[in-house]
Length: 117
Length: 112
Image (cartoon, each protein chain N blue to C red):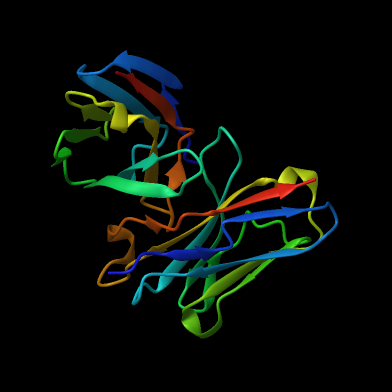
């Protein structure tokens, strides 16, 4: 099966600019996650979707970050305006939801490395 | 709130050694645990997924064990190779949450 696709791979922007990331999960995976990984740290959850509905966005900085998942497939994550501390790798993951959703592990994409200067 | 730690933060070993990476979690009421590998500048690759009812999982030279009562998991790598050099992360999904909480990772270097 095809993996989780993410684009772009790299992005450099100036602070206060806006940026968007795209993710296409594994076909049939209803659950999609966006994680932020700062250098030297483990990934931290930003938002979780089940189909096109939000399950958990408690750690999403909603004053500057937004995400959507139209039609329950592709997802975009946007930052506007970006700050220096947003420099990180943004990872998208998907998970199967057959039977018991929590029973399955994650499959990650390659990530987008964002540098804010 | 679940917290996950990994010791050591970094490890350097000569090729051929057997090694153990440790993962600890504060809340033992977990649903499952997943080990990942991350190469520099890349995404995470899944290695092993252990359900709470299991005590271990094996894949090739890798063996992951789970001791819920003590809040620990170990990843055993047999006969290490330079190609095993990467950061290894463990992630825990507890009984209350939908998603995984990650540890900070152990950076492994296997020297030829």
